[in-house]
Image 1: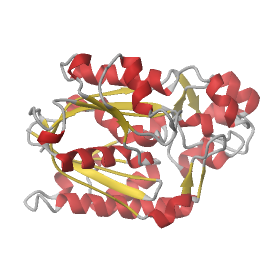
Image 2 (image 1 turned 90 degrees about the horizontal axis):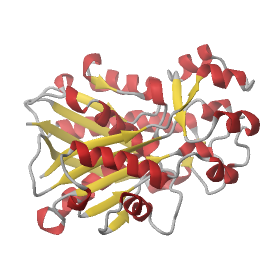
Image 3 (image 1 turned 60 degrees about the vertical axis):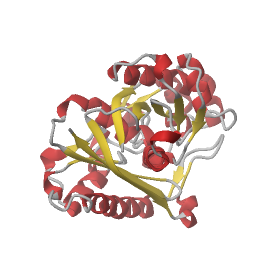
Length: 328
C-alpha cells in the first residue's frame, strides 16, 4: 500500500492566450482553437517577445532563452509538495523524475532537481513521457515497504514549449509548461491511499508522438487521440473493477490533460459525471507528465473522506496507466 502525503505544482508566469496566438498570423482564431481543443490559455518558460520574434523556429536556441530551467521549476514544485506534506527536505530519502522534455539525458533530471533542492539522496529517472506518474507510482507500488525509504519525492517537469513550432497552428495551440511534485510513502499512512495501480505500453507505436532533441514536437494527431480515449476508458474500468461495490459514476476522475475534447469523450464513454471531472487543460494546456498530477495538486483540498479518485494517463511510447486513490 502506498500513501500520498503532499502534492505541489508550478506554472510559469508568462501566458499564451488565444489572442496572442491569433496575433502570430498563423491562420488560427480563438473560435478555431476552442472548437478544436477547448484550450483558452497556456503558460511558458519562454518570453512572449521571444516567441513572437522567432516563432521558436530554432528549438536548439530555446533553452538559452528560457526564464527557468527544469531543475528550477522542479525545485519550486518539490518545495510546495514537501511543505504540504508537513515535512522537511531532509526527510526525503529518494527523488524520482520523469518528463516528455528532460533537459539532460546525462545526468538524470532527478539529480539536477535534487541538487537545486539541496537534497542529498538517491536520485533517478523513471520516465514514460506523459504517463510518467503512472509508471513511477506503479513501480514503487510493486517494490513494497522494505525496498524504499520513508518518503520519496516524485517530480515531473515538462517545460515543453521549448520544442514547439509556433508556425504550426496544430501543435502550438496544445502545449503549456508546468511542473508537478508529490511526496509518497509505503511506510507512513496518509489520507490519500493508493490501493491499486497499473501501467503498460505498446512500443510498436513509439513513433506516433515524439520530442526529439533540437527538433520540434511531432505527432499523428488523430491516431494519438483515438488511442488516448480508448486507453483512458480501459484504465478507468480496470481500476474500478477492484471496487465492484462502487459505481464509476460516483468516482472522481483526473485524466491526461491532452485537450478538453478528448477528456469529455473519455468521461462520456466511461460514465464519469461532469461534477466529478477535475481538469485544468482549458487554462494551462497540455502540460505533459505534469498535467494530471498538477490537477491533483490544485484540487488537493477539495476531496473528502470516503471519496474514490481514479487517475488515468496516457503517453508516448505508446504507454498508459493509472492509480486508484481512496481518501480515508
